[in-house]
Length: 426
Image (cartoon, rainbow, N blue to C red):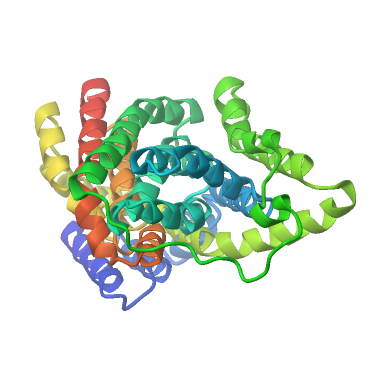
């Protein structure tokens, strides 16, 4: 029975890779198929309808709310000019020094990456940052990669990601936070090395400059969209509350939303801006929220007693227990998280993580180390991820070019995460 489940999983991966089915739909169909193969009844306890679909769909509800709040805060950073002001100030400070400009944009991307992920984060930092980097001679692929590496460096502090791993792996937030703090130095070092090495290795290329605006506003504030200096602290507010004061994730993010609003908006305009940005956030968050519904359903399916009993001997047979082999094997498997592969945590990888925990192959915190390390690779180098596609296209290159340039760096980040996991939790 376990072999049949693995074959069905392989078929699901093939459907996602070939784009025969959207990832969310494929995961739901896969979950239902696994449940039936595992012998789950249609209704009742540990059933397809009541357990997999009814209980699985809202299982990651807290993560979905966190994603919505992150998208809302991202919309406010965009509309109020906070993100644009941060990038512009960095570019003004860097002047015509390409490395300084790139490092500055990297810092802003990291800060934005702590607030929201995917394409919105890339756009917040990249709309101004990519043209500015290219204008001072940074190669296009390096400019796109800088944005992505910066977002990935901020990812260990992205509060919705904390919530996702906490709920999906049934771990307390402090445990997730503790590992993310260990992963952050690897992500930051790789990002800085990417900028320093790639800007020098590729040389200076003057190929593109920004087009001037067609309509000239009446004031510098309107022209540049500058936000007040104290509003620029907005991305830090949720982090200070969550890290420094251990405030819960959702209140911390709501505090960031309110701070952005209060520091940039006149009282009579607050109501309209709140509603406008919230409705816009729903549009941004809709796709990931659907994906998290599907992931919750898949997790419910692979945790069914029949599925665990069928998969446990097979998974245990191929899962290394020796720490050195653990690091070696999972490092070699890094490419399997690309192209929506089986180790992509926002796809079938979530199901595999659920099996590893439910079957007792690894402790949940070790699975956290695997999943978060692979996520660092996916978030930068996967040519099918929205942030990679947007950054590459906006810079005028292909996602595959960005993948080839960034993959060695994020592969090293994953290796660092695996080493920490093996040394600490195995």
